[in-house]
Amino acid sequence: MMRSINPQWGLLVTGGLLVLVSLWGVAQGAAEISTANVVGILAKACGLSVDVTWPAWMESVVLQIRLPRVITGIFVGSALGLSGATLQGLFRNPLASPSIIGVSSGASLGAVLAIYFGLAALSVWSIPVLAFLGASLTTFAVYSIATHRGHTPTETLLLAGVAIGALNTAISAFVMSLALSRWEVGQQILFWSMGGLDGRTWDHALLIAPMVLLGAGLIMAYSRDLDAMLLGEVHAASVGIDVPYVRKVLIGLTSLLTGTAVAVAGGVAFVGLIVPHILRLLIGPHHRWLLPASMLGGGLFVVAADLAIRMLFADKPVPLGVVTAFVGAPFFLFLLIRHRKEFHN
Amino acid sequence: MDVLLEARDLSFDYGSKPILRNLQLRCHAGESIGLIGPNGAGKTTLLRLFMNLVSPVAGEVQLCGENLRRLPRKEIARRISLVPQDVALSYALSVREVVSMGRNPHLGRFEPEGEKDLEIVQRSLEVTEMGELAERTVDTLSGGERQRVLIARALAQETPVLLLDEPTANLDLCHQLEVLQLLQRLTSQGVCAIAAIHDLSLASRFFDRLLLVCDQEIVADGSPQTVLTEENLWRYFRIRAVIENAPEGKGFSVIPMESSPH
Image (cartoon, rainbow over all chains, first blue to last red):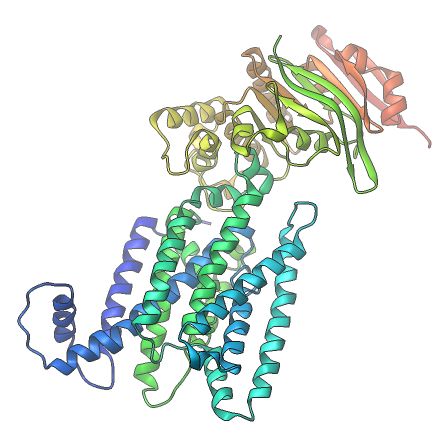
């Protein structure tokens, strides 16, 4: 497999696209606000002195409604992209993603329970807390089941993840079917399970941003370990990497990231699986580039999908997860067909 | 001579299946040791015990005078390196990048490679004749080149003890000789090299000491002359073989004749 583009360039282009699409995302909405005004409002909010050429309501629409939505989207996407890249590297398995080791479904189940039992109405923190608990408990269960005499074989771990994921999904579906008689609760669960950024506020952005930044910093410190683990566990151990320890740390961090992302935006499908794949094909397998690029790429994907929903289905509440899967799956298949040989490795 | 690696009453089993029993062994600086024995005798397990990749059920391994189980993984990797048999070189990492991984045990988590590390990597590439292929990606290499990359990676670790699991498997004759000559040079510089090897004639020529592992024990330990006897081959390898002095007075030719009926 040849590296098609220089990783630094890849990172720069992805980052540039993310900035452009995010600005577009802030400019797009029911009320028309010109890009120039958006840039002006953002510059003013950053403390720069600019001439105010817009009415005050525009400022509150941009800063209180659209900006937190886009920023939440960026961090949700980065959390999922980073988790996917980390897990794929850790398990040397292209199928690994937060959803395949059951973390996403665990977080979903926690959130579904929070909505069903009416906790969501009591506190805005109940969904995030229960989603995070669900993600952590699932990770812990999967890891404990797959560990025998201090060894955790990848195959057993993935199989345990798939099984517990199925269990989580079944319980969520059961709870949802109980909730169908109460239409409002059922609808809330349904929309939540398909993901979305509607009505996300600074509370959500401020919950996820520090988690993602902290998680990213810690995971990035393991990029050399992840590179060495690509060549197998015995090789990694022989160059001084404590494989069981690194696995525990990275699985813990990815469940923190995924749990937070699901808590904030619901189930956004496919981001953690395809974004790292596409970037690995483009910039190569080096984690010091692949991890930050997957963050930027994940953010780009989610913000672009959310933008597409708002432009194409302005009057219908189409869930975000539907669009990410609808766009992501065909694109992924296209890549799969074109690069069949590389994927085989 | 310094004892670098020592096994004391080392025992290991996989569940109810005993693999090694009360093993005693001392390996010294500058020694080249060939690990021979039939399939499934526990050669790979022994190398894994020396790396603390699996834990003994009884006994202990002393590495440079300290109990292996008390050493952190990074410290182990500064003292002993392993060239494993099956490594997935299927990613688009360059040869130089893989060899550089050998410097990992000498670097802090946030410490970039220094000039000295780059020099050591370059030297390891040249010693293994991989210098010209340094920028190629490892998924495009031939079997012999892959083996040399992994040996170069182990050399970059600069450890006093070097373990190799069948380093000549899948290599053509020329590359087999190159690998074994390289090991000879390293041991003459004071490295203790222990290699599992199937080719008994090559083993007799390139190793000072052979360990014959069979039936959960080291059944013979000594110079090739004392270990490679027709009786030992009959008893432990279950073959009738003819052993002749190799030409030029170095080692033996082991000519397998027939397997013994059991």
